[in-house]
Image (cartoon, rainbow, N blue to C red; front, side, top):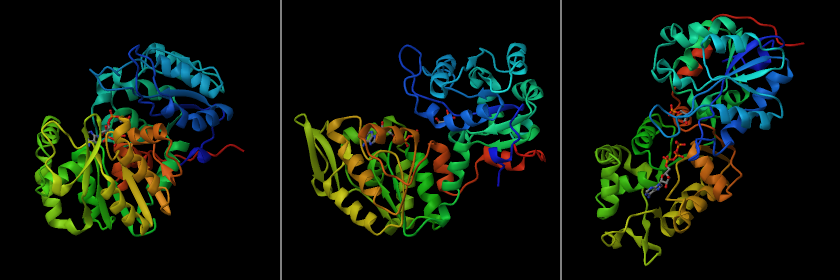
Length: 408
Ligand SMILES: Nc1ncnc2c1ncn2[C@@H]1O[C@H](COP(=O)(O)OP(=O)(O)OP(=O)(O)O)[C@@H](O)[C@H]1O
Ligand SMILES: O=C(O)[C@H](O)COP(=O)(O)O
């Protein structure tokens, strides 16, 4: 168990708060979607209202990517969302950053620069080694405590996530606490338990499928999206050149063998699409498996109505459904039906859990709501849904011994 904000004496304490605001960035280099910032408002407001001196740490994008930008526009947006002044300093652990943190008064908040502008932050370390990096040795001396609210990055073993809690008293923020409460008790959720794996991250989904089937966490795995297409090919279905080329281009060709091995081992518990939707004459056109392959340039862009009926029947008996990744190319109106219908059906299951940041935004776009829990995390949620430990959470749990009285 990790300590939470309830265990932290906030007033007058200088707190380094790691959040995850890794967000879509527009062509202008500015923040294009603030959903991930909104998620952290409760944690940051609470720290500010309780008189903390708040230094925010976060990453944005990956080196070399178009979304690898400064956190200046994030700081601006946070200030609006919190309805409270938020400073920004274009440094993370240099003298300027340390001075900005040291000069904080009770209730002040400053956002430090994108942690990944500093190269060691994009490496994975054991916590003790992460604690010796320049970021942690530079900044920790001006902090009294560390709060990790970045659940979505908790599967990374990077300095800002595992280094600070090794040298400072560490606490879970409100987002982290709620994610751990829900996703950490996956083994206790009502059975039968169904995992619906879709989207385009085929190798991650196959890892999850292996793990949850081996551990007996999943009674059934339903496949959709590109994941479903790979399983169909692994099962000997000819999906045609367009889908095969797409899978090859994405580098997922080797995954077909892994999918075939999984079908050999657990085939009776893995459900495959019974039909797919392609674009024909500018419109959605559904084809049963027996009618495949489609015409030359037609790709399987969504699951079809028979698959939806089949999956809905399976979901009717489920106690828990865990979903990750859209069922089709939901961005195109003709192919949103699979995702909309399947996710809507999932909201009727007693416990319905959605993992995946992109999936969450797809659902917002489609107006589908009513889940028991929508996780802020993609990779981190998937890892927890297989009951695997997250390095950043383990580092919080193992952190230095500390006893701080909570506020009166
Ligand atoms: N049949 C398909 N063919 C091509 N692309 C597809 C198909 N089905 C789904 N996709 C694409 O998959 C993408 C989303 O997959 P992804 O695995 O990234 O989702 P996610 O798990 O929600 O993401 P994250 O884990 O990053 O939050 C969408 O852009 C969608 O268009
Ligand atoms: O968006 C995410 O999933 C997290 O912020 C982690 O980002 P990363 O995959 O670039 O480490």
